[in-house]
Image (tube, rainbow, N blue to C red; front, side, top):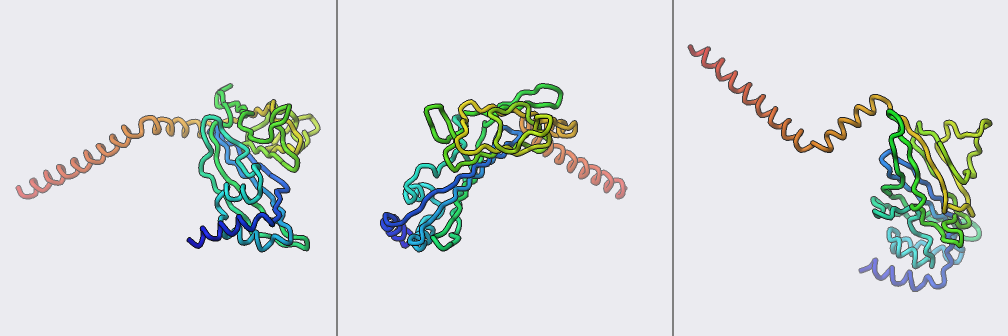
Length: 257
């Protein structure tokens, strides 16, 4: 009841508050199972006259995204990496405390979630796999030329450790390629505001060790025949118990004779 009243008062009073999302930092950490862990940081400016109101808003509904969309009067507080076939999952939304300054304060909203099917993969050689990023996963600003990073926005893509880039276009704003024109030993790539994502090409290759291949094989066997293997294991344990019981019984009979 108290939380509901706080929410009503906060939204009503917010007509006089001034909040503004000043910067968005979106990071995609690509996984070998074609999924990605996405962390988005939304940097919010709060005017000096709205500091108290922000603290009230944060206390009233800090974990509700739609609540903060209404308070900030913006639709950019959303997941910017999505899958057309499956929604995001394991989403966590945090509203940070206010760091005050002379002219107001700043806070960071953090959104963490997972997205499946962000890449396609094909086996190109023994224990070598080529991953291609699906450009359709981007959910940024739509312009006449298609998906484009808005002002004050940064996109970061992190590839698995040990992977290497085969093709990337447009070239990332950071880092710069090395002196022979490639990105050897580089795992993080960044694009800044104004970059078109409509035809972004991002392809990388991972190489699997023989040990990892063997472990993946048995993991696949377990995923496919898990129940059968579990049943076989239980049966083996039961047979072992029966065998020990019968053997001990025979030994006891021999002793009595």
